Each structure stands twice: as structure tokens, then as C-alpha cells.
Image (tube, rainbow, N blue to C red; front, side):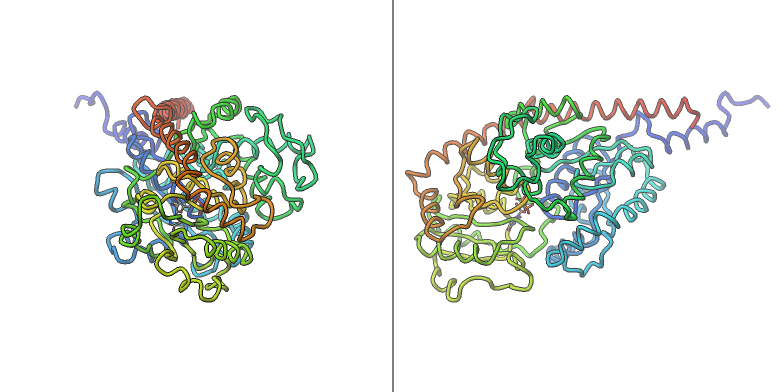
Length: 507
Ligand code: UDP
């Protein structure tokens, strides 16, 4: 019998090889692991959808704790309960979904015991991730080609190397913040590291950063005690980043042109923001950790731009004394307000921190809720200002909704984001001295200043201009669209190169 031109054994061998190794014909398959706090999960979910729309296969990984809280909050739509991406998959995107333990029991109160939570992310989480990645890599078709992990994780380069994956780091904050962490060694050398209250001169030697006052740097760079677990995480994470193949950043080239081009000399850094749910409407992938209150009817009853929206994000705590000054400051105004007070905003052990009688005193003009769909609220025409802790997602969402900000930074990058908002872009004002105590008198004065039609007009028009920059970045040929294309092109080139190397090595 004549031998077939391609013996069966060789066909099977080639087929098996082509399934097991990255092949230029396969779509890139990325495991995307979201950092387990909401301000990181939300943009990670929308990055996953963006990449899947560009032809990627994504395996999205949430921690069991985030999954549990999200599915509980979304419990009225049973469709989503176990698979948060079910709705987008129905629309044709290949996003698979799974969970991993962060090392602590699901019921553990991570808000109350933040230190233990961070310890677990630093020391325990990587073992669980490694086990899961091994399983996904072994079972997946098409084969996994890259690992997309939040920059604050301490293990991505180790895991990427172990499984021969490309390492894509996802940075959810401004490029300025990335740059300050990246050049921490320069701050140390110049005595600006951990120099809270002792150095008043500006930092003017970070590549691509014109000048920044030490008090505008992230709290972790200012604090004198650098032995905390958060510091250990940051130090390790910014060592890891040096071997990343790519960094994707939720910022916009035109907002931070010099900082971004200076960074590009060190790392393949792609600004692909703003990363929002498609159409800037409530996402079909549930992301809220608490039940959302529907405020539409109440907002519908209020005049145009008359309501101050107040929220301090998903994670940080507010000192009770500050919360009381804000409440008493609101009492001194006649402004309408919608206030998101998370049950743990002061502490999960103090769930009713407002002064006695406050809710009765503001009845009709003030609404207090535990959580909402922020993008739905911000885009309501009744909203005229946003009293915010300056989380980066909130800042971008406020700009997109053309709502000027009243800034009350509390921790981490929020101080640096405030500087961008107030000093550089002039799309908002400070609630009080960003580094000092706030008083009810200045709270009421600044609320009135932002919400008054005349005195607030300059911030409104500045934020409208800034929105145009964001919009342009997302248009065909806009910078973020182009940067995403360049990223996909370069990633595929690297995958191809690694495929060729594997073939040469006889794998
Ligand atoms: N958010 C929300 N509902 C709320 C408060 C916040 O959906 O009641 C969302 C908000 O839209 C944003 C995220 O939670 O996307 C908070 O992220 P940010 O970076 O502003 O702050 P963080 O929570 O990380 O401190």
C-alpha cells in the first residue's frame, strides 16, 4: 500500500502541536486577573470586553470574594448569578469566567481587616493563582498566550515566566502616578521619598513630569512609615513591572503627553482610556458589590444642574469627624444632594455615622443611599457637581459626564488626581485644604461656589472642553483607538516570535 503524502500520525502530531502552542492563526487568548477591589475590577471588566471585541479570547478571573458579593448584589437577575459575563457571551464575545481564592474565607470582612487582606494578597494569593493558571493553560483551546494582570499584583512576571506567557500589566490610574512609583529610586536619591511635611521644594527631576509638590504625590510616597504591607506590595509590584512585555493604561495620551512619552522610553506603555462600559450606559456585566438604589425618579424631580452628587468610592474610609463636618456643611447650604454612604464608609462597625436628625433636616433636598449606578447618576441632567474622593474612575466618569468636581482626596493616588483636576486642568476645586482638617464653614462655602451658576461656570466650561479630548481619543483614528491597535499588533508579533522560537526548539 502506498504511504499517504501526510501520514496520519504526522497529521495528529501537527494538530496536537498546533492546539498546544500559540499559533499565528489562533486568536490571542489572555487570562485577565482583576485586582480584588472595585475600582480595579470595573475597568478590568471593560478592558476584557474591549479586548474581546478586538478578537481576543479572554478568561476573566475574579476572586471568590468579589464574585460572591457581586452575584449577591445582582441576585434579582438570576441569569448572571454564576457567570457574570453570560450576557456579553450571548452577544458573541468569547469571554470565559472563573474565580480564585484570595487566601481568605469569603465571609472575612476585608474592609474592617484591611491589613490582613493585604497580607494575604502579598503572601498567599500567588499560590492560588499559580494553581489556577496551570489548570487553564493545560485545558484551554485556543492555547493561552498572555497573562494580563493588574500592576499592583506582586507575582505576574513570575507566573508569566513559569507558563511561558507574555506579561501585560494593566495600570488603572493616571500615567503620572505610574511614573512617580516607577522612579521611586530618584525620589529616594533626592530625599523626597517618605518626606511628609519635611520637604517643601518641588520634585522636578522625574522624566516627563514638569514639577510636582511632595504633598501632591501619592500618600504611600509621602508617609514616613514605609514598613506597612501596602508599601511592601508597591515595592514588589514596581520591581515586577520592569519585566512586563506591555503596560496598558486607563489614561489618554493627550491628557498626559509628556509623562506618557517619557515612560515609553522605559516600557512599552499604551494609553487606551477612558475604559468605560460601551455607550457609557450601565453595563450588562454586573460589577456592583452592593444593591444599587434607583434614584431616577428623585433626580427627575430636581431642576437642571441643581444636585450635588457625593461619593467616596468603593474602598476608602472617611474619618467620622470629617464626615460630620461635611454633613454640617451641607446643612449650612440650600443645595440639593444625592449622597452615597457605603455601609462601611466610616467602618463596618459604625454603620450610622450621620448626626442625629440629619436626614429629617434635609428631607426633600437630600437623598442618602448605600450605592447606585454611578454612571447613570452622573449622566442625569439634574447633577451639577460631584463631591468626590478623586478616585481615577470617578474622575474620568465625571469628565465624561461634563460634571465639575469638588475634591476631597483621602488616600493613595487621590492626592495626585486632585492636583490634575484642580491645579492642571481646572475642572474642579478643593473641598478644603487637601492635607489639613476640613471645617463645615469651608465645606458650605465651596459647595456653594461650585454649584452656583455664575461662580461654577468656568469649571463647567473647562470640563466640557476636557470631555472633547476624551471623546476624540475614542473616535476612529483617535489616540486610544490607535494605541489599542498598536498594542494588538505588537502583541501578535511577540506571540508569533515565541511560536517560531518554540518550533525551532523542537517543542
Ligand atoms: N461606583 C458606583 N456606585 C457608587 C459609587 C461608585 O458604581 O455608588 C463606581 C464608580 O462608578 C467607579 C468605581 O465605583 O467606577 C469607583 O472607582 P474609583 O476609582 O473612583 O474609586 P475607588 O473605589 O477605587 O476608591
